[in-house]
Every structure is written in structure tokens, then in C-alpha cells.
Image (cartoon, rainbow, N blue to C red):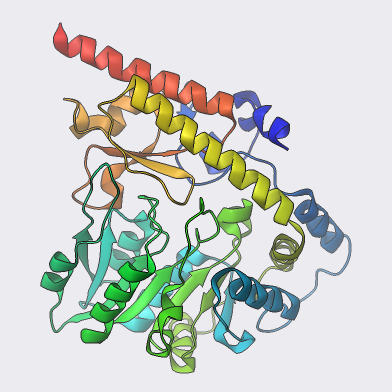
Length: 390
């Protein structure tokens, strides 16, 4: 399979109809939105084709029982977390689910805490639902990103209702240790907070033990929405299917009430894909993860050698690396400078107000495309440095 991934070219990718390769002109290399450039597993392709050739009528209410069973078995075997089918809502969009969770757990004007830099839809969801974003910047060092517990305490007011957690953390790539999460759980319980934990990247993990936040205690299970799904792991984002998991029936009912009957049943093709992913595509998953890890290491080695002023922390999970360009004079316009030079990355300030001068690169592509992007980044930075020195 490595040979298949290695063979992917920019010409191949420009035939893809998705937003990643169609948003920018052909002069720009797009390594931004978190899609992989790899073909999905044959087992998943076959499952979709077989379902499309057969029954595509109304799905079973509440989700496909086989998919729910596969989800239960996966969470138990991988993370030692026991859930039942009644704890799960199958949803057609986890992005929309983030908004809904915020609205279900809080009222307009109330505070929602989240650690930044963070997946931009967290901040968008807080803003668009009329809540107040309480940003807790993580602490950066070349050794890794860390939670700032002292600053977290300073954010809490009587109007603070919710903690939003990204675990593993996007875009820093941290896999929080059990000790860190236990300390965060103590903070949650001390301040009687409700929790939204996005654990969509839990399986894109380079040898670190992932702990489901809600699994730490029965008390946390009763106050936490956990978001999980196959989209990032199996490159199925366009199919939309995901899971909102909570062991508190009253909170799940609030989620449903916010949507006022507008939550559609899961698409039958996405359900077929999810079932195949969780029961047949383990070999593909392992080979992709190995390829991603090699790309991660290659990216780090080249940057350390060729652009040593670009800072970044060790990446423990996800397939995007957050880069710090603040050692360069163009840092306040880093995204603009990179884009003008033909490289589209994610703007750091979209992940939080304190993260100007950062950019996120997606390395889930072929090695040749990744090398082209690094070459272009080196050229852009060197050209800017030469301009400044002259």
C-alpha cells in the first residue's frame, strides 16, 4: 500500500472535487484542511457499492444496530470504555453536533472554556450560539504543549457552564496523559462544569495511550458529551457520520430538543462505510498510520535541518503539525506570505486569538507532495529573509 500512497501526484489530487484541492488556484499547493489524499480502504469502497446496489430505503430509527455494536466493541477494546447502544446518538455531522452540544449544555451569554490553540469550529460554535468564549492558551515549548491549570482557574465565573476539550488536541497533536486528564477532571467537578470532549482523532495516534475523558469516572460520564467517529481515521469526512455519546439520558434528550426534530437519520451509505471501517479495514488503518508517522518524522527532520527557526512541538497524534514562525519578521502575516508563495496552510489565528504567526500543515499526502510543500516553504522563507537583509 505504501507504493500506492507514494505514487499520488498533484495532478491526481487536482481531479478530486473536494474543497481541499479546489479552493485555491493550481499555482498553490494546498496542505490545509484535514483530509487525507489517500484512497479509502477497498473494503469500505466495496461496502458502499454493495449497499448502493441494494437497499437504500429508510434506515433503522436510532442508527444501524451493527454499527452501534461495532462502535461498542471498538471503544472497549481500544480504550477500555464500556457503553451501550442507548448512550449513542448517530449524527450526520459532528461539526453541527458541536454547535448543538454547546446549545444543549448552556444558555446564551454563559461562558464556555476551551484550551487554545483549538480546532476552529470550537470557537465558531461558541460565537454562533451566542455564548462567551473563555480561551485558555496552552503553554508552548519545544518539549511539547501543556495545559495551564493556573490560568484555567482564573477563567471561572458564576456564568461559566461548559468546558470544551479536544482530546487528542487539534492542532497541537497532544495526547493528554491520564494524570493530566484526571487533574482536568478535578477542575471540572470542583466547578460543576459540563463537558464536550471531541475525541475524533483518538485513533490517529503514534504509540501513546489515549484515555477517553468520560471514562475517568461515573461522575464524568454523567456530565460529558463525547464526540467520536470514523471520519478522520478512515478519510470519510465527506460522508459525515459520527457519534455523540453520553451516559446521561437527560443530556441526550436536551441535545434532541435543541434540534427540534431536525436531526435526520444517518445516511445508509455512511453507515455501511462505518461498519466496514470498524470491522474490515484494520490492515488499511495500520498501513496508513505507519505512512503518516513516517511523513511526520520526515517533515520534522527536514524542518529542523533546513528551517531551524521554525518551532514546533513533538506530534503525538493527528496528521497536522502546528508550526511557529514567530522568529521571522513576517510572522504577523505568515499565512499571507505563505499563500503568496504558493503554499496554503491553516491560519494560526483561526485557532485562537493569541496564535498569530502560527500555521498548520497537513502531511496526510504522498511523500513527493509533502517534499514539494517543504521545498516551497524553504524557498518562501529564504526569499523573505533575503528581502529583509537587503
